[in-house]
Image (cartoon, rainbow, N blue to C red; front, top):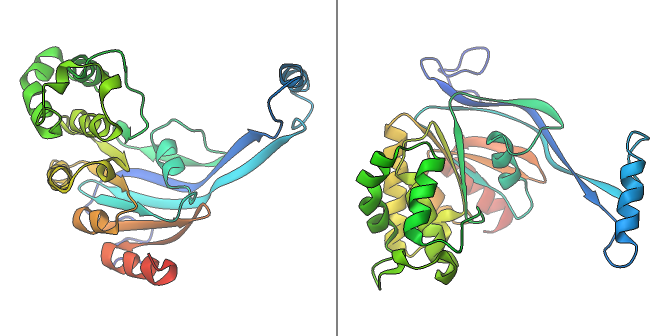
Amino acid sequence: MADENDDINGNRQGRIPTVIADEVHIVYRVNGGGGGKGSATAALSRILRRGKGEARGVRKVHAVRGVSFTAYRGEAIGLIGTNGSGKSTLLRAIAGLLPTESGKVYTDGQPSLLGVNAALMNDLTGERNVILGGLAMGMTREQIKDRYQGIVDFSGINEKGDFITLPMRTYSSGMAARLRFSIAAAKDHDVLMIDEALATGDRKFQIRSEQRIRELRKEAGTVFLVSHSNKSIRDTCDRVLWLEKGELLMDGPTDEVIKAYEKETGK
């Protein structure tokens, strides 16, 4: 049901939209052929058949199906749904990392996607990754220098030793995820998308992260959070999108959507 402050186009009057998804469809094309002997020959055959229709053995996976919504500055939006529902795929499309099959994604400002699987340079130290990560996000060296200690302290990875000076390959997955979130959270974002990053830390780190998300919202940014923790969504987000099998089932206030989700799934 539309908000009473929405105009006829669904825009919330007086609020600035940051992301508009307009009937977004995303389709993966998966090679159905297996590996083993002859796989290179088969691949060459498929390349040669390009332009003659869809190659044999290519399977289409319709990951996102006609999703539409508008996000506004100052919102924190949770994405929920069972595994394979299209949450991470949708974030990647918003970030510009995946093309849409049809429909459009419009963004105001630069979207930044933070995921626990984002590549880190394992042979470099945590310290070097902080510098390179900051530069990649557009911070100056002076800004990185000013914020460096805060990033390390926020991550908590030095609480049991001087891990920041060790190569990233020596880190646990949780330590790497905490440092990655800390680097991203050191910068104000127009649109920040977080994919399961808060699930990897202890409760103390989660509380710090949730507080930082609230600060990012106050600084006029928009935050998207994918999490299997309904508590993290409740503590952090004021709005929730519920996806299942690529379709948007519900978009509304956090408590309302999560209650419906828990009733339906028992989770």
